[in-house]
Length: 260
Image 1 (cartoon, helix red, strand yellow):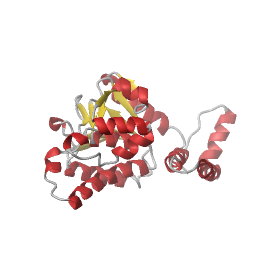
Image 2 (cartoon, one colour):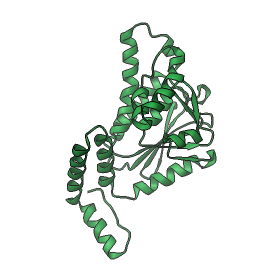
Image 3 (cartoon, one colour):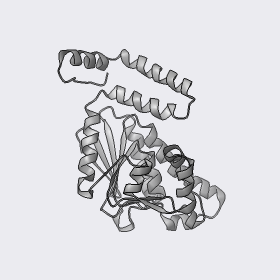
Image 4 (cartoon, helix red, strand yellow):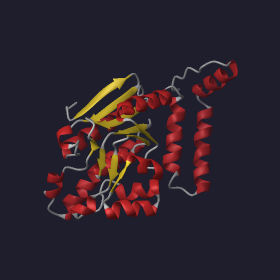
């Protein structure tokens, strides 16, 4: 893997690090391509249980798209293609069968904020700052920012962030629900790993079914969402992991899940 995106395995957990610290891990075309290829490969990996996405150094998770590349866009077709490239990466994150945890250190702005929002949840360091400042460049957010801020935070906060371009700090991000936990920067990766390992110890098919029920059901009317949930629940009852989980509970022992 190119050194602008590094991967480390901790058992069944993959740690992906955006590694362009000199430019605050800005998301240039090469980095987005590597992310897309890596996430696509993860889709078919049966040994994977969780992914952690973070940025190199303490200053930034990702401070947005590469501005020089944006400035070189010459027409609407090129602009739309650029947006669609970033959107493919964020959609791959959402579609992965395993949970993806964003460990946000420092700035998560523009495309970096959009990348973090595509993850299943976000752990932030105390120095983290989030924002959608694209209007300062003369464009709206393009990698899903207008849509995911609305779905995560409601239209009022989405409009505030995307129209003002202002940054919010970790404490405010926690208050509005953009992040789920804030920790000292030294504890960021250990905390993300602790959570990932806790998830990895659970029944993997049930984890995938739960993620899909939440992700797919979010855009459905409640009645259809409940039907989807029941469908996933019924499918899990037929698995060996379900038999193991219920037997282990009754036997008062830890279950040993095999993903089947």
